[in-house]
Image 1 (tube, rainbow, N blue to C red):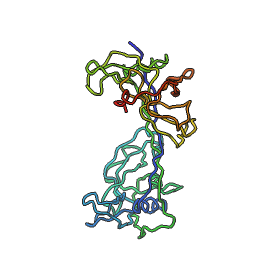
Image 2 (cartoon, rainbow, N blue to C red; image 1 turned 120 degrees about the horizontal axis):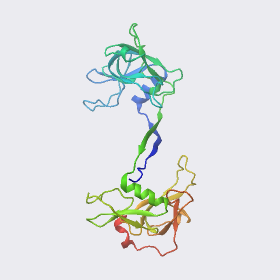
Image 3 (cartoon, rainbow, N blue to C red; image 1 turned 90 degrees about the horizontal axis):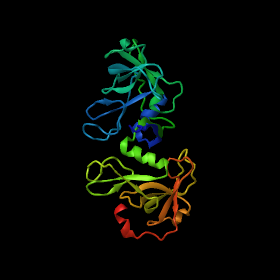
Image 4 (cartoon, one colour; image 1 turned 120 degrees about the vertical axis):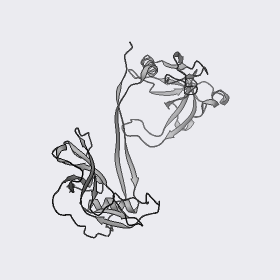
Length: 313
């Protein structure tokens, strides 16, 4: 049996968004230890607040303060907290309907164990020591057997309101490429590019997926393609990526390798960025120990005729 390849992969990026007046007031309120909801035309109070009524789709702007105490409506125990979660010790994820609200807020509930949590239990907000205007200003909820914490009557107007947030998004997973892509990756280690031919339409796909994306039939016939190819389309990158040691501007292109019926991605170098063009003939440049071409450079051949690659644009 051939070795089954697998590798840990991480997809991570900062998600940046601006805030409308409702979300701005909600997050600014959390910074000031005030919880705000919105009141709909029929009198329901929604927390967290939304800008449009989920039933009627009418715009909502009527801000209402609710209490920092509430009731657990449902919950699930988290035995093994993950990186970036609100608490490092085991805790409950709970839907909490704050006093004065008609909907529930999802957050962490700090409790000594699952036996200490039940639907209907009373809880209160535990505020974070340092607050910046984010949902994490609520550090968590905690069990509470005292009186209802009445709202102060805040109007929802603040000095220096929060107008935008940046939320890190990250996905950690283990990728296993399967038979077809394992063969493709093994060939790359020998500085070769291998695709697979569809037994029905006879097209060669790179990278191979084990099945024809057009016909849906399994593929197994390996075909070596390239190494040279043709630029079909491209873009000029002017924003430097984090942890990518490439100076901008640079060109990223779709390249149809000779013998392939699907273009793949590659960076173009060895030519000024403003001289890259459709039809440019290129070849791979490999680095020692690299698992794929570092970039593609011009071969010096005449440009390919558009008719020869128009189906791959």
